[in-house]
Image 1 (cartoon, one colour):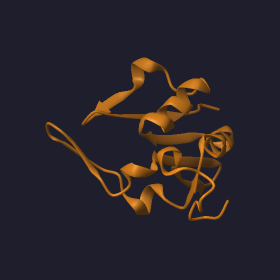
Image 2: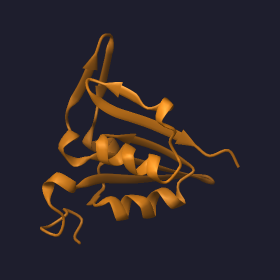
Image 3: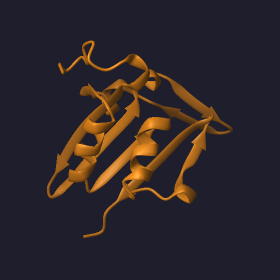
Image 4: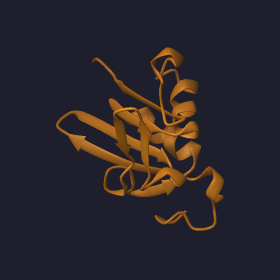
Length: 111
């Protein structure tokens, strides 16, 4: 798969992923691709799903799982990304926020 995602993953399943490394911490920011550039609004909350923060590569759920296995911190936005975190046991359902109808969750591993 190329960094633009190519044709190998249908648009409905694409995920944008960006990894940050600071010291011993590895943070993965990921969102469902169709959310990039949108602002989610809910009351006083204006949550910008910015390309700068979430986009480095496009992939699928398997690629996101591989990145999350290395992560000590993650910021996940969208149905597919949050579902992946839940299925991996990294996110508990009760900790998922819904902003403008879109799930958002974060985790930090305490080592």
